[in-house]
Length: 395
Image (cartoon, rainbow, N blue to C red; front, side, top):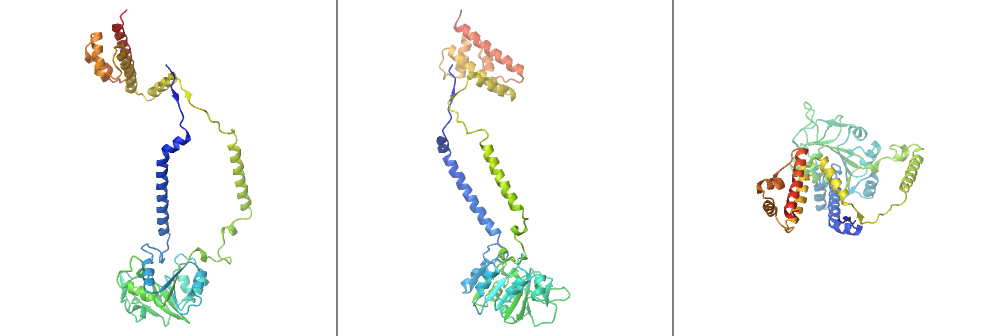
């Protein structure tokens, strides 16, 4: 019996066979990366961001203002905002420092950059800096009435309240809107307007009315358009990391790291590189073993036998023995290899003068439960082959 051979496919054949799945995997990976990028971009947007389509964003308001002829300029740093407002006489600046990127002096500078400045959701610390006569107050739920004669409240008698309300703690000429200042409940106002020389400072607590989620509720749309569209130029400033102070207020990672950090990092990188080169050449270049390789049939048989024994696959083992016995019995009876099992059983029954039922039970139906059952059935198959051979080739 000739030994079987195993031929290793070439790299080119493997690549050609797998080309479809490689292209499909790359296509799905590209779609996943694009989807994650788009979702991450939308999720990373700040609240009140004019480019954000999220519920807390204000993209709908910004787009409608542009359609109404307002030049909406988006900026992300105080330097950009200063450049955008330079030389513009009548302009509106809108900004909200919700993540506390700005220092007090930066907020004070921003408040004086335009003729109308709308500072949304001011913090207590910033109020102490730019408007000490104003403080936070309790916020009512639902909608609040204007209760004032300000120009931006003419066409918007009621808006959605929250998330912040403001109150006046000192006598001042401030204009307060959208609230009743109920001292008993501690409720404040959604809008407080103050004169600061050449600048009209509007402190806005009712920013919910500007968001994509609520812009169509109550009179929010009319209020937002009247408040932010007072001038032909609107600079929408969204503070970011670019606003961190460079004068020692906030240090960079390079400034915070000790002097020995950079040499240690370089030393570690060089060490890893040398170790990789050393280990990569430790056992010399790769050796390609040429195939085909001869695999002895006895090794295959013994290997399968050990696997069957380890997994207690008695029925699988018996089936393998039966298949071999049927092939040899068919050859002894002079039958074709394509003959059915029933034809072989009928032929054996005639030659050995045995009923077909026990032969069928031995060759097909019996299932070993224990190792002893398997040995008995194996011996019975061997005995049957010997009887058939004696019947076909009498001595």
